[in-house]
Amino acid sequence: MFLKHGTDMAMMSEHAARGVREGQPAPWRGRLFLWEGRGLYLGPTFATDMHAHHAAQICVALTGTFRLRSGHNASWFRSRSIIIPADHAHQLDGEGGVLSLLFLDPEAVETRALMQQQGAEVRTIPEPTLRRLLPPLRRCWREQWDNHESEILCRRFIQILIFPGNVPRPLDPRITQAVQLFRANTDRRMTIAEAAAAVALSPSRLAHLFRAHMGLAVRRYLLWLRLAEALQKITCGVSLTVAAHAAGFADSAHLSRTFRRMFGLVPSMLSRHSTFVQASSGEAPYSRLTSSPLVKDYRR
Image: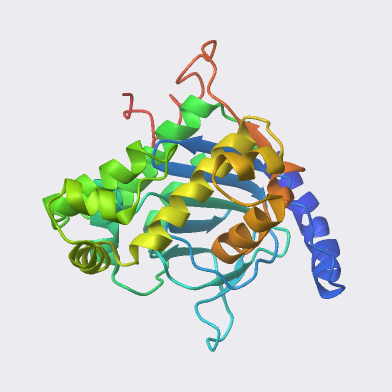
């Protein structure tokens, strides 16, 4: 059954590459999951522009390989897997193959632990680890696992990548508090000055500490939160225009330009063609997990 998927994707890859060469963006006809602090895309993947987003990213090819370059002056290389740190410029070309793209909140403890061992550069997943990860990822794609099963798989995925005993360095508590304030007040757009006052810092000192601990400027982080809010609304079925206004963008064109700078593609490429998989109260969790050694003992 999986070989049939691989054959279909190989044919799609040939047409996709031709479409990219002709300047016609290919649709991303995959499945998109969103959870607190994580997002997963499973499906055919094509070329993106050079971009950098605040989420850390783990890419795994379920069929064949993909191409990637990390920086405008870097050379393209092929790989079956890659771990990309937060805010690291990169360009991906899946060439139509089926990829797993896992996006991780860089403030999460598990992500900070992974990035601490990862360092500032892109790195591949060790081959023995990749061999453990691929079978359940392929099953998740071909059997269309539900939201709950897929989330369990992703949590276990991350745990396997983190070295035992790897504990991330703690953030400055004032930065932790500022992040919590920004996240809790996305509806009213809390300002940097307001957050600084709440944590007993000057705006300039907060900006300095924020960049030192988080690796990006406060304003870019606030923009990231607005994009995440817009994407969340798009997954709920609202139009790009409504999502743009709700997240504080001037219009859908403003949202699309910003989204493209962050993710390398416009949101309509996902919203028109991909399936957003929502949690369902009627799900039967773990029904397909018991035969997978990767996830069978990970039941929270």
